[in-house]
Image 1 (cartoon, rainbow, N blue to C red):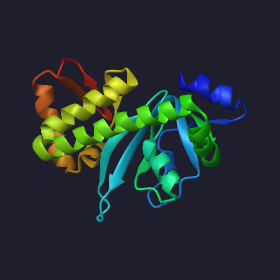
Image 2 (image 1 turned 180 degrees about the vertical axis):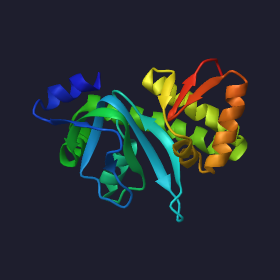
Image 3 (image 1 turned 60 degrees about the horizontal axis):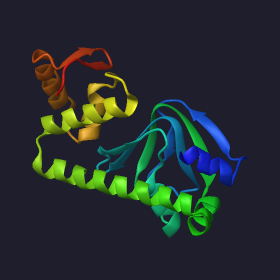
Length: 199
């Protein structure tokens, strides 16, 4: 486990708990630390010039944000926004240590490369979904991903948030969710969606 690796490397690293809505990393900000998630869920998005956000991927237990590593390694500003979706317990790894460990610690380097490979595959899937799949297919995919990441079939998410993640209008999402409810796939309530059948 990555926690054991980090503990062996440095037992004095800070561990913080962040409530939902906390921005861990914003676009155009310099990366100062690498967050490693012990518990919780982080949503990673990217915005266009008009300010429309689109979901890239989620970061869950035992994971980190590969875009943080890339930004830090190149000393570039962040290209993404990372926001706490579900209360998160995070190990704060200073950039200097994270970069040094990549040169001296094979286990940490392996963690980074495995993370990079996973995110690269997810981004390829994301490009494929946007290019070749309809909005309703992408909506189902987001619900499945979030449900899997949380290990919970009841999701606390609004129609507006889903619309932002998909880069579409709230009305479109509301219509599609109602159709899914009519088919018996989900149950809707204020701010919540419960998955009741395989999609």
